[in-house]
Image (tube, rainbow, N blue to C red; front, side, top):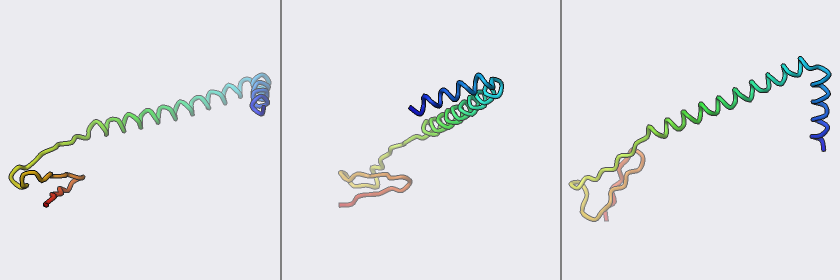
Length: 82
């Protein structure tokens, strides 16, 4: 029930001091809008980075015996010899 009191106080201040309250509402709106714009730009940058990553799979038949897989992790090549 505290939120009811908060709404009442907000409405009282809005009608008692309309110009400062409208300025406060505008500043809060700008702050929220700026935060949303920032998160949108960050998400676009992250999506652009993910789209720029490519994976190339290759298998060198000459360096590995038949039936033994070549596993590539990060930038190093691991050859399994049995």
